[in-house]
Image (cartoon, rainbow, N blue to C red; front, side, top):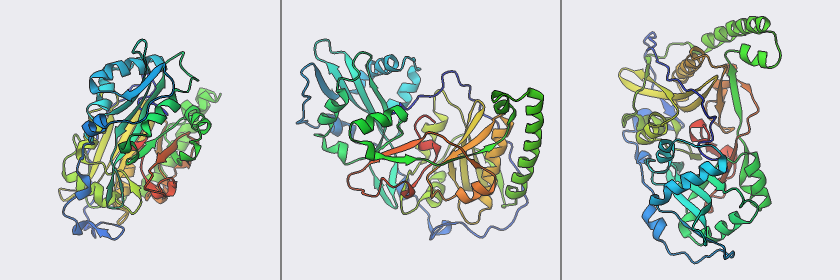
Length: 413
């Protein structure tokens, strides 16, 4: 599996200031998602942060034991996390900030990370690890326990000795491991390992991705274009794209688009009203959103909200990643579409002002806002992002069209 923080070392991320965008005030008709009108909902019962039962998971007696006498497979206590950090750094050859590890392992509002380690008996050295972190998940109105695979490593010199199989044997004996849905984002190498281990059917498939080109000169010069010709082509493309997106998206919606410094409980209502559907989705409450974005120790994110008469009607989060931007979260009603249009335009504008070459969106085939995105000029791009999932009591969890998520739930972004 791809480790959670496998980002490009040294990538500078800039928080871009948002200037409130005044628009002509019109009378909104009300907002609805499916059959649930916003006016009909005065609470957000799905949005409570339910910390996973770490102590119960950690203390549950195990019946399985590895067949290799050289090693033991066991669960790690949080007091051992520093040793796991060292193992991950050694395996990937990159030293990550300890604050980044602690953010992921200890500070997640949904609970402490669960780590399965393989230790050499003779030396007590950790030689393999699988970390899973609790993650919000629901099927319609039913909350599901879920974890996301994160740091999945084997120490140098121990690869190819069946450690993954040994760990899997022991994990199979723990009932709480299989009452939770498992989510992962394996890279190409990890998908090969899954196939070799007979688990390839758990890889659901590639996630569709589209991008809007914003500054083409940099990419064209990489492809061998002379700089003057590339900048001329960029100016032409910029004029056309800017005019088209403005015509399509810059329509009045009856409010303003304003910066978000911290998410508050009132955003939970917006998330549930705008994002809930009959399939699988990730209910990000305010605590989770603040942890995921504003509390991240190395990355910076830009968040904005559509506000109508002092009430939040929708919000979005964008990551500015050097020359690239990603739409991380997007909560907006489908009807009326004016709120979604205003938020998408603000995301495009922020990415363009930050000098990004493109704004990318990755989401399942039935993501509710794909029609708007396509009409705004976003084009298909080939990105190697695959969903891995398993839930023994949810037989349709491995159908990508049954999901709603964005980059905020994708490992590495």
